[in-house]
Image (cartoon, rainbow, N blue to C red):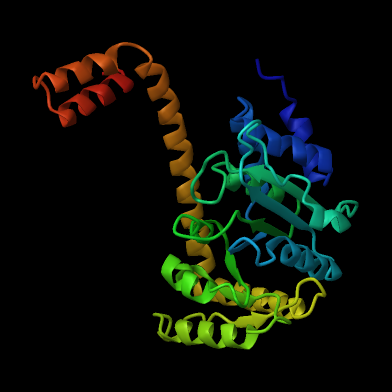
Length: 321
């Protein structure tokens, strides 16, 4: 049985920037707590202020190091920062395998930084289904910028673009990332491209190839955003200020062009759809545990019913018809 929650008190403490209250609210989201509806209703008036930045890239390119360096640069500007690091799920506990976020320990005692690892729990898009709601909590808790670091990059991980106001795609020299990015469709979702570990051989070649591929894209129309390609050495902080400046430039362009409002509307649409589908699955699961689904399947196998009519009857049952 779910533990009772004093939602008004918890929300008030989170609004005051109390880390424990923020962490408790995120846990309610991850656990699908019954109080979640009340929590989201209480937080709604305080959302819409934070800038959401997605950070994605292949394993080994230095996402956590880069995220940590960006946090340092943003804190130097006295901006409150939230970090959601979406990790592979533990096959045993369902929790986040990389939950300690060792590379971000330098920010652990900073009251202006909130760091939370979230498990994907088998979600293929590289993001936990609950990530959008966790974003709302950090937004309402007063974060100026929320960084979302994803599991990796590939066919299924482009989902970050639907979640973020600005998406950073991280690559590294000598990893064949340029070609991989083109194959995976990452060129289309990146707003800022970062070639990290630029002190290695091949960094200039990687930048050149990436810029050439971007020129072949479809971003040539009047007023379109032209994604910059920036070299960094995140471990030393080199180039990170340039990345933060590019984030600011993109935020300004997105606000003036209407792209920011369009992205946030799409994000809310996706969140509504995910909640509706989750609710439907729960209803379907309890309904299917009876004999109705099996009875319909027997009818289909016997040829007395086609699968479309069977599905219609199942939905009629869910709707109480």
